[in-house]
Image (cartoon, rainbow, N blue to C red; front, side):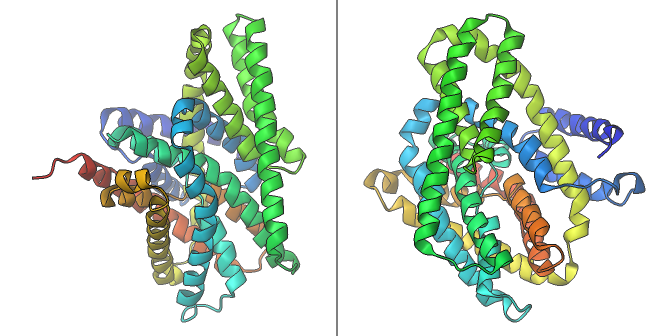
Length: 398
């Protein structure tokens, strides 16, 4: 992607976000992706490519950090039970059930092994925190529900990466899947990522008091967002959870003391400009490269897989809500529907899909096409439908 491409895409993103400020419930991600699809037919943009490294190295650390440090730490503690249930055990159950359903549905259309279906399910289980947050901030009057969605979206990225890495490794290398080794690896990778993020967060919260210059404090936040991610990845543990934990550490510091108020204002001014810039580039480029992966021959199966993702997610949400009495009272049928629709596929799913393509080369092209198509359908339809669904919660009953 050339510098002139970046400038043009940022300008298009600026126009879309400007409209978003004037229109209620304007589906920014959908508009950006569809504009990207239109741009893909213009020769000037056809040389643009999107790789796993672009998403993981440049986009993801910043987006995860922004979501985490904006997240009130007190609400994270309050909703931690529901968040962890949905993003760990709930995600694993969802992946297994979805894989089984994909395997059964695919047989009349394409020869798909259960392992291939499980790889697809591991890509389709993480939800996109950026997409969800941008919509719920406008439409939801239920603060607790929004916090559950945000918290789950941040944490389940780490779970999905571990699951995908193990399953994709089995598919690519012909290794045997060992349940015990998977859970031990999941525990070590996740815990180590959290510890690294906490260490980076602690160091930066101490270092920020050594200077009163706002520009240096912003530099520290950049180091925290990307440094925690890269350090964890280099050590072979979860960079996603490291960035999320680092952001939550800052959020905790902001809540504990008024002394950091000026620091928060500086960070908001910087990262609030960075976030829409990254989102504009990311979703526009996803739309531009989408036409390379899509096949209209698979459209029927793609729709079936999309419906299956909603059905399985609803069942898992309903099952999770039964685990505690307080959750049973809190989670009405409408709220379960909103939580289900909030499981939108986005940047993380695309990154995992591109990683799979890099590992497998031209093999298993049907997995790439089916999964990318399902991601786009999820991103477009769920982003549009979640607003009216959320409004129904707040609508007074007669």
